[in-house]
Image (cartoon, rainbow, N blue to C red; front, side):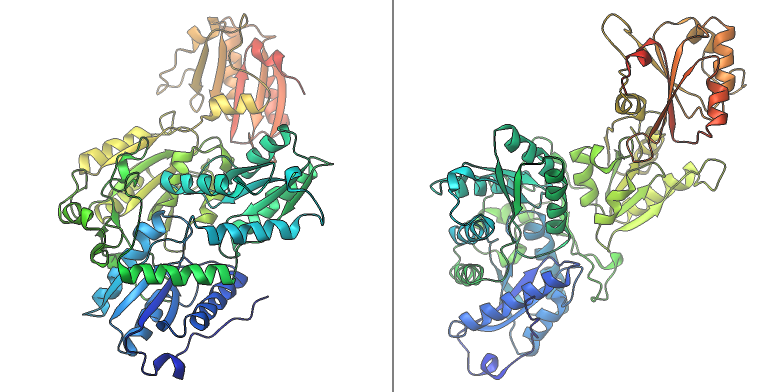
Length: 584
């Protein structure tokens, strides 16, 4: 393990170095102690290699780990340095480099009057990084192995910024060109597709017998470890396929040299950022809601700020620090046309799918990653909450069967209040928000309050649960219609709006949601009013997770079976001949 390095001032840093420009290296942060150690070791390597060209060097993170950025800037100011180079230590020009770090630096300018900074551009793609990745790949390849027999899966972090994802694809192509590998394919561990298992399956189908999985990360952390886990799981399911995982780029001379180059570029004003496909300036298909979005600094655990201290900074690739980006000046001084009124945020009503984390839509995951507040249901994919930063407020809006429940009125009030406070709110629901999910009630509450909102459809358990159990709800020549019904009220209930007698005479597929408590009464009514008592039925409980079980029955016996097998929600009941197509 690399030895952690203290970032305290030393005599050689403060001797007459007038004329040399101080540098603040800004990282995102990680929960990995090894990742923090590698970051600090790289800072020491930069300081050593740039002793004759750099001024005082400090480093800090915008979230998750110490030291915080505010300490790094504060140390510079304490040395009398009010003119800095701030260098984002990020591989791709995504949200951290374009918005989060500039917003954090804006906060530092408010803390330290007179502070100015020049903003460096992100690190990649760059030949020095490609050289480092190549070395990591070769280090895990068999001795004497021919590169033409090796496929490479280059795995990036994944981003809600399509331009950043495109950079990873570009790196994969540049890594393949001229190096003799059989092929290099890009994939992502989070927020974007293709996934690690998907790219490994693709390479396997292409005939690969040896694959090196190369994490395109600067330092160790949760996501590189997740890459290793998923690669190992794929290898276990494919005996005979040689899968190896290379190291991250880490603390090395190539990375330190690139930092020094970016420092020099910032001083000379040679910052060549790509603005043609920047989602904060251009309405890229599927990402139009990002144009002109305010940027907010993260809340670092060692920096005493809270949500009430956010200082919005409209996206300008670094605001007033970007003298080199003159073509942004007019945009920066105008209010973007689709920017909501001051103090008002946005609400995304997101369908989380049938339960498993990886069955949520990419757009939903992108909005979740950008959220300030998440109001979450009991059946939403709660595993995704573990990836949220500590600054994200998670509000539990669970409605437990026969247990404590948040009222719909209180949920509406919660999302509106947070949006009015200028926060990005994700209302994370199970299934699809508009299928028995009261999603439009929340949308109407936002509209009445003047809060902008959007809806992200989700995969409903009405379709997913039968499919995951091997049952299609329609099938050529067998079922040409499907009816989805809420069973939370039994036939004959005065508040029921369902025409159960018509459903009893129908011949298509019937899918019942929220029907566990009333399935016996519903089945008896259907049989009494004409449905075949021998009709095939399947109960699918906990669809999509390790507890999933499928219980076949006949319509006239399903009520007894549900009681005997102690079926509990969430469970979906499928009635119809399509059930007979199921294969174990």
